[in-house]
Length: 301
Length: 189
Image 1 (tube, chains in turn cyan, green):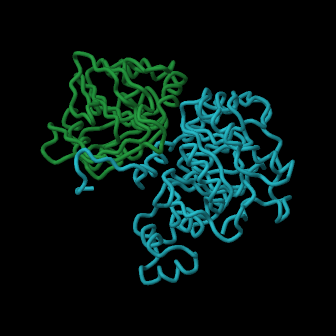
Image 2 (cartoon, chains in turn orange, yellow):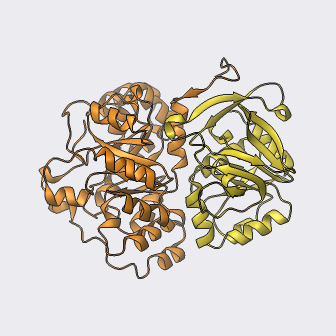
Image 3 (cartoon, helix red, strand yellow):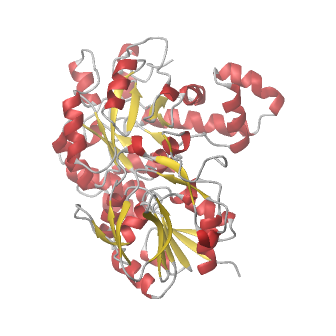
């Protein structure tokens, strides 16, 4: 940076990518399928919206191949709100990612919620100007995605279930592995990196700093303000909510309550007040009843 | 005795600001309710989504307490979204702001994320070495009132301004290693 002339500008740098992720901390990113939902989300206090074709609960119910949204819908959502607009591409779908970049979305989610386009490789995300977020179930997966260029990580949970247990499992797995790394002698780190399947330099960095090199958010299964507060208490820096809002019977009210809960997660009295009379939450599916094939979190390599 | 800086912690990168303020010797408190303001000598309003923070300020009854805090003359520093919240006028959007700084801003004035950038700025009050600055979906200051001092510009646009005890930056000094902006703010407290 010292060599940069005063008038020079550097766009799409790593710092600008991580910077946007930093700005989204302490907030709620809401799944929306059209401009009307996007407006409701913004009005409720969403810090960003995620444009997708169908919310995960519908992807589960309807089956079929889930793909990137229609670019027209993404444009309508971008025109409808002033907050950042994210959109999902399929794992490994280079062309969908390039289309999303051409649309100038603010973040691309290379997401297991959509049907993977590649069963071995993810997108090389450093090649893009738009920052990427990717899901993970554990530290190794998080560091592989960061190695490929993800500027934000979200633990996967099990999208479209309204069951928080997988989100908790994945976040505890990441934070627990980081805690263990901090106590690992340096001479053991190469073997740890091999076992995690993670880049050595990133393993070393996490061992030194005790945190992921990019912001760490939580996703998959949040249905109530208490769920959102739980993920914050366990260390998530922000929360993604998918089906939990627009599959409940009063989306605007519930969305607002979840936003408040993410800010006041350390205040149980306030959480009690926030949680009152929200109407029915999404009905949900207990994640233990899912077969292997119904689990979205297993997608990603 | 050390100075205590409050960081408004409704949404955004408040943790980064707390770390930056601690690095230059301040103690920090996260401010989420009225009572927290009583504990602090100065306040930082962080980067984040200005619309979210503005809605939470209204919903959680913090708007008037913040104005009263400002009226005591205790220094306030806003970055990016914080600058928007401090401004008198926001172009195009119906959005509540504190109106503590006589400037007009245009939200996302540089465009979407793809236009976010890093650069260096000349800031005379901070010395000859340029300041490393990162702009993220930043607002553009489109008007400055008479009482407002412009401390730095980028391509002719004000990016660091001050009016009495209130200071605002459209970039993010909390995201870089350069501590001089926080040091300068702390010296005002």
